[in-house]
Length: 220
Ligand SMILES: O=C[C@H](O)[C@H](O)[C@H](O)COP(=O)(O)O
Image (cartoon, protein in one colour):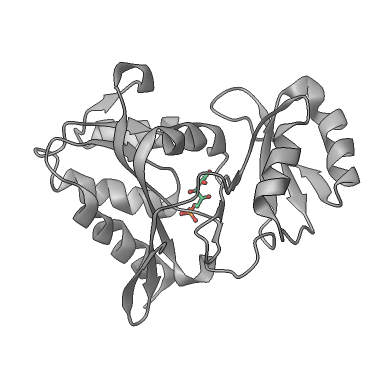
């Protein structure tokens, strides 16, 4: 199976977690896009969605799936999204598509987070994928210097502006042995909006696409 077929398989497998009447959080990226296609097949059952990016909102609306502003809903029943890396504790690196801040907000609001990935995203230790950080533009150089002092190599993502009007710094060469500590340290740097480390609020369930089928990982 190709990587695209594995992404599609997990996107459709996530429908098992969607029940009639739910408010569904919708992620961003190529894997989440397959979930949106899947959601369109049961759109009569879905009360509504909240979306983690302009791109996902536009796709949902094109397919006739109702999208609410996060401030219009009391909560999110289930959030389905991809990841750039996921470890055995279901902590993740996210933000390869620059949507990390809205993703973190919806993850925080959600009762259940279902992460959908192809097998290439599974790692033992997070950090091979450069860690994305959304930063207020005027703080870019300062934040980069602070990240160097934490042992990383920050690279400014040229030409990218987030949906919130900010910039992205990708931190290379990190071996993230203590994700919770690093998430806290980066969050404390002035000018950081969000770090794409999802360790305090990781996933509850991971659906991993493999050539043997979709593997379900749940934290014990
Ligand atoms: O900002 C983007 C998100 O965090 C995506 O969920 C992540 O980058 C994975 O995207 P894809 O499914 O395209 O690999």
